[in-house]
Image 1 (cartoon, rainbow, N blue to C red):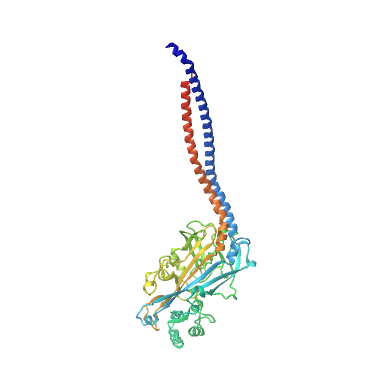
Image 2: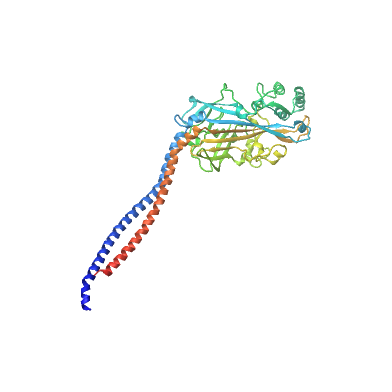
Length: 516
């Protein structure tokens, strides 16, 4: 026994030496590997936290730079992309006219039926806006100009409808005349004028004349007795003659105050009007609607000037978002108070909105001014139910309302539908041939849809101008996302470090036990 033990002792010693040696080499490799893991962990952690920390101030830096670039591009000055767009808009604008053709006038006059209408349209007129800058009256803060706004019938887009189509409509000068007489003598004279000229409560007329103005023997007779301005037509819509020169207008350039961009300082020679109920409502303010201040905020309200009816209005961000040819747009529309009457919304007393809900007074913009003419949403949408109940052939349509899709960074309107219906307030005149009518009826005459969209070239231009903004804002998120993603391998390596520390501790214990 003792001999076998003594023979085995050298072998056992060699094995222990080898085991200990292997343990030391394994421990060394593990320590080197642990050091590499720790170094990688620290580098990744620093990179991850660094990218996330840098991303937040970068957003502010990029935003400031983007805002500076956008402001320089949209202000009305030489070299900006907005100036030529504002001067001669590359927007194909149309005014579509829908006529309420009155199908049963005789039955309405004798009291057997209520007015029935068949809507005809659209009669499409191409709209041209050209501004001629007046450098003499312009400066850094304000740019002055004369604008021509003309309309030309587009037979191809309107086909098969033609501008000389004949329709039956309310004869507004005849219907309005009783509201302008003040005594018995004038009343007798009006009855005589109607009989002498053969005028009726309704009129057959060509569409083009109805829209842009007409005269007839009854109007000429009114002119003779001083009840109608001489030398003018009865006109609801205005179409500039290219040979005419309107009065000077001026708007803010945005160079002195970016929020003043496009806001009227003077319109057609006026800084304020004298046609509304108080000074606030007579102010000329807001933009023409095609160019607005940039860098819009969610829920923001904007003032616009509606030259067709000579008043300002407020539009607001509805929260709807739309994408048009790659551009994100925000939808703006009239505030809900726009068509409220003064009973529901007292400030509208300044606009003389004392009619049923859904109507706004626009008689000041007719020629001659002062006719009882009222605007509304097309087809009386959102109006008092009685407006529809008193007529037939008219059904409100929720899609018929005014809105503009605006690119929020530049403030550019890229798509717009400005819609309004023109109605006449007809009051019963017992001594004339419409004594069987209700006390008051609001007769629809036409509704107008003024609409347009940016050209593809302008879409591309705005997209290019916004590219830096998109890259800049994207860089903030890219850095933040990369920083977050780097946390994943950092955590994995952290677990590897913990595992290696445990292995190293185990090896040390084994080495201590097995060492001779």
